[in-house]
Image 1 (cartoon, rainbow over the protein chains, first blue to last red):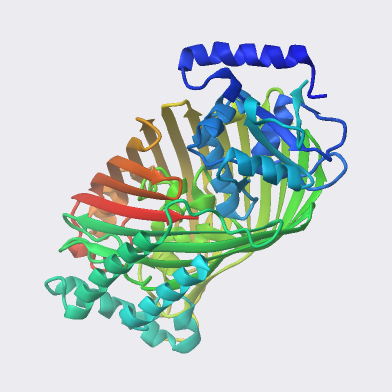
Image 2: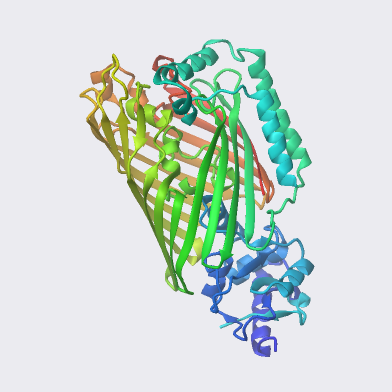
Amino acid sequence: MRGGFVTRALRRLLGVIALCFTGAIPAENFPVVIVNSAASPETFLSQSALSAIFGMRLRKWEDGSLIKVFVLPDEHPLHVAFSKYILRVFPYQLRNAWDRLVFSGTGEEPVKVVSEQQMRARVSATPGAIGYLSDSMIDETVKVVTFK
Amino acid sequence: MRLSRLLLSNSQYLKKTIPFYYSGKSGFFASTGWESRRNAPILRIRGLVGAQYPASPTVALRQVSVALVFAVLWGHWPKTAAAVELFDDFQVHGFLSQGYSLTSDNNVFGASSAAGSFDFTEAGLNASWMPISDLRLAVQALFRRAGAGHEHDVELDFGLLDYTILSTLGYRLGVRLGRFKNPLGLYNDTRDVVFTRPTILLPQSIYPDRTRALSLSADGGLVYGEYRGDWGHLSLEFGAGIPRGDNLDTELAILGVDYPGDTYSELSYIGRLGYELDGGKYRIAISSARVDTRYDPGPPSSQNLGPGKDIFTPVIFSAQYNSEKWSLTAEYAIRPIKESGFDDRLNLDLISESYYLQALYRFDANWQAVARYDVLYNNREDRHGKRYHATTGRPAYTQFAKDWTVGLRYTIDSSSLIAAEYHYVNGTAWLPPQDNPDPADLEQRWHLFCLLAGFRF
């Protein structure tokens, strides 16, 4: 149950179209949002919810538990693609927003993982976790999030 | 582990290279009477400025050792240092930067006008812990060397308890109690972290270093609210607290001269309303404060200056546009200042005015360039100081500053950068008084060149 086939196909198509202009990454490496598999069945998140979560401004799930956000390094191609095509911001904007939080005492930044393997391992092992992976890296240890 | 190594080597090096010398900050208030406080820093500055610089082998040695220690730390640290995660929901971050300033005339961060100065070091260490999802504790300590009067400041930058009262997909409402950072403009909240500011020296018209202490943080409480909707992200912060006005910088900014007695802060207010559209592509904000600083003359003396009051009510308008390559930023401020009670010579009621326009261009993920025009008028009714000169006899150019800046930055990786910039400045209005004790030595038109290396984790 990884979300509807049509949604996935559409997302892939959109990815391909987007990448025609940038020529950066093949479609199977297109970023997909994932959560810990123990997450509630409600794995539909809106664009604005994702922006708030990865912007570290929405800190808890609907059940009140803490959201644990994992990201790859700023310069990682998947992070760049995730920022641009899923969150629709540039990586430097995310970095600036996190730095403002961290160094003014008003918030925290996401936990950084160094590879997609580590991303999958940490998200699958951490309750309340959210992150992203390439399409080709998805397996049954994590749950895919689809957009409303 | 890495963290303790940095701290250890840093403090050891400090003990060796910097003579124990307090000035300006609380050390003076705690240890000595006003007499020594009044004289010591000035004498010290004269000693540095007057002689052919470097005046003594120790000063030269200190500069070289600062550079060396920095280079060693640089080499030892892994280039992909990640934030320290000690346990779940606990984060530790820090930064360290070392600057070099060279001026044609006038001094910025030490005796920069002779052989240049390395007296600009900024370091900070912070921790944030969320024991439960609605409660967070955060603290940050700063170490700073920034020219005369700031030989080695250590300060608590913020220390607060942040409680989220309400948090939904669309709204957030919370309160911060303790020492909170003052929400002013686009850069004040993180002004000491080079990674968060566009240039080595922030636009001094809006973020003057000479009143830095007052604008940093305040002890009290702050309420914040956020609303996220399809039409953008709206945020409001409102705080009430005691700013940090009990220092020599504040006294010099208000009185111009170090009188006997001390300045201190009374309950002040601050607020910022911000709006972001398209994930921060467009950002606008309006921020304001009412900063209440008092002067207590202390024991009676020959200079009989009465107790006085300084009310500062700046209003800052900020706007920023962010695209993949460009960030265009402008801020404009009116800064009414009202001083009363002292005596007729010092009382004033005027409106200072300042603004800057800034364009930043990203060539790629590593290189960026910035250009800025920054203007400060101490009195908008007397922009070029003509009336000031006529009534006081002091140079008109101390009343304004127009600063053209160009800069280049190379981001080595997400944790380190090097930056260079050049300023051509007409006017001396924002020069720090402690680095420039004698107004007769000031030059109206001057050049400033800065280099800086920064590291963060």
